[in-house]
Structures are given as structure tokens and as C-alpha cells.
Image (tube, rainbow, N blue to C red; front, side, top):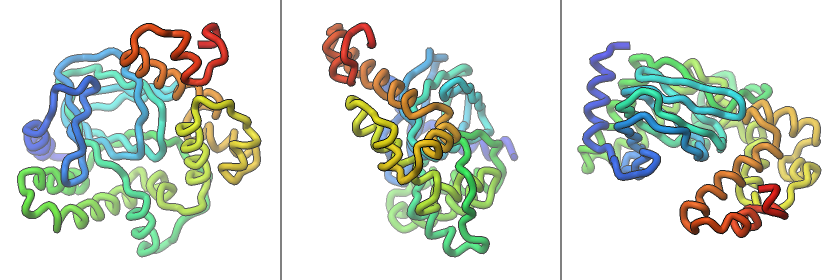
Length: 271
């Protein structure tokens, strides 16, 4: 990968970076991307990654998923294929990245047009890191340039985003991308369970009921859920509860017992 192209992309993105967000993540901008920036090394920040491509332009970061640590640096990209509760820490600053949400419907359309169809394969981990290549960075540069060309954005954004999804579908993380667009596949079933857990995190969770939501057997749900998220459904629910509790502590103060009940714990000792 040509480093001058990476530098060009970093300069384009830096003009639109926001430094007033507590987690460094800027607002969604019109071409469908976010600029993520941090001037300093940070402690671990708890958040939920949603399906996205994250292109790292400067610095380095590590994301912890369950017991796994995933470091990445400038010149690499991160792909996330499902909602994941993680801890993210900037380990080399300044840190700068571009985040682009992944579009399952667009990916599914591309899969229909591509030869080979959609393989019925077991789901893979929903977070992975790869090295950028020149073709991918060229597409991202053209997308970021639209931030300064609002008159062109409405027409060109869908075309460039479509090309970006295609590059990912034919790149190193093709298997992950194919599973995102596979209607009725195992990843979609796991994502149904994830959606239920995120929406009902404060409610008691029965694995048989969750398996019914996902359309899987209990054994299959356990196996595929852990393959995707690196944790069991119960561990996932616990992580979501803890993140929601942290958010409430920041907004409501120190009513720990009340916050524990609000996120689904029966007693303060559990929380």
C-alpha cells in the first residue's frame, strides 16, 4: 500500500474530525461515514460496535472482545459483522480513523449478482483485522472527498458505497462479508438473538426462549453465538447490562442499587 495515499486520506479526514466527543466518535456525515479521532492515549472505553468498516489512518488502538484482544494500527482496517459489546483503548496517539456502516441489503444485492452465490458455512468471528490495499484505500478516498463536495454526494455516494462493499466482498474478509448478506444464514440467526438481548437486556433470559427467537436449537445457538461473539448469550447479556449501568451512573449519579435494578439485577449484591 502506498503510504502517500494513506497520508492523503488522513489529511482529508482530519479536516472533519471532532474532538468534543467523549469516545472520539464524530457524528454520521452525509456520505455515510464517521470520523473517529483522539489526541491522547485512553483507558478502555466500553461501547457496542455495530456492523461497520473502520479504516485506521493514524495511531493505534486495541479492542477487547470477551477474552480476546485485537490490536490494529494505521494502514489496517477493522470489520465488524454483528453488534458486539467491547472495550476499546487508544494505545498510540494521535488516533484517526474512518468508520463506514455496512449495508446488509446492499451486500445481499451484490451477492445475487456475483457468481458462486452464498455459501452455507458456519459463522466466523464477527470482528477481524486486515491490512489495507491500494484498491480499497482508493475507494475510501473517493468517499471521504464527498465531504467537501456536497453537490456531488447525493449522486455519487450510493455508487461509491456499492463499490466499497464489493471490494470487501472480494477481499481478505470475503467470508465475513458474505455472511452479512446471507438471508436465513447462521449469522442472521445469531443476530436475531443479539437483537433480542440488546432490546430486552433488563429482562430474565431463558436460553430455550432465545433459541426460539433465533430459530435454532439450544445447542446450535450456544455454539454459533460463541463463534460469532466470543462469549455465551449469558455473558453477552451481562456485558450489555454493565455498559447500560455505566451510562446510567454517568447520567444519574451514585444510586447504585437503583441502577442495578434498572438494568435487570434482583439485588445490589449481583450488581
